[in-house]
Image (cartoon, rainbow, N blue to C red):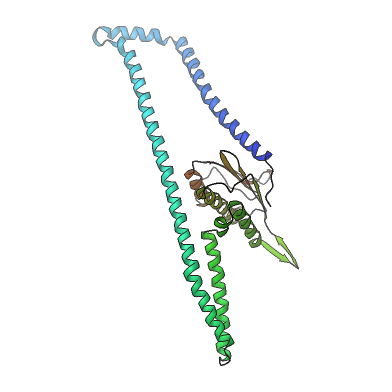
Length: 319
């Protein structure tokens, strides 16, 4: 069951706000620093006097003393040009977000259609194959060889049916549509616990400790947000299983008034963040976060001597 602990998420959000305002304060501090440095250098080297002496040589022919207002006008024009380009960039970024959002919607619609077709068509034919094989098993006139073949067909049909069921769940989680996001995530985590467990004597032991903590009501959002959060967790766990070799995976999800935060932490081997990542796992997560105009922060350490070895993904989505 999900736990209700808000203090860790409040601390993370507070730290993020502190870093944001610290960066703004640093940028603002550069303005007076640049003014003071320019004033000090100009006073030390007497730039104004040297400029006046140099301008006097060409004043009669070129009106060089009028160069300063022209330079100021050019500066204003450059600022106007930069502002126009910034506004155009904002519009392009907004259009790019809308396009990426639409691409992901089309992708999910196609997955839903494929899952429905697999359930209706392939599932129907597999059931028919099992029924026909079962009729051979109960037919007294069937030979031993025919019954053996029927058993083999039934086993293969059961295997294909289970594989199809797993594929349908991967394409479109049924619990997400029927029960909501929290129940779908709990069911998904339970599935991963079963997959990554071994039976020793009569006791089933999980090889990886998966912990899911949900804070607040996450079942109140639009379908787009629900499927995005589910896919982020799905992609992250797949990525961890492939590369991290972790023993503990912690998923924290918190819902508040204006935003949704997701923190996924593992104690695996981590990766070198200075090297370009060629994998598609983190890229897929980043694209889904960007489609909802969210923010993603990744911290990873590969040094085994550190206490916080592993990878941590922090995501914040405005809702």
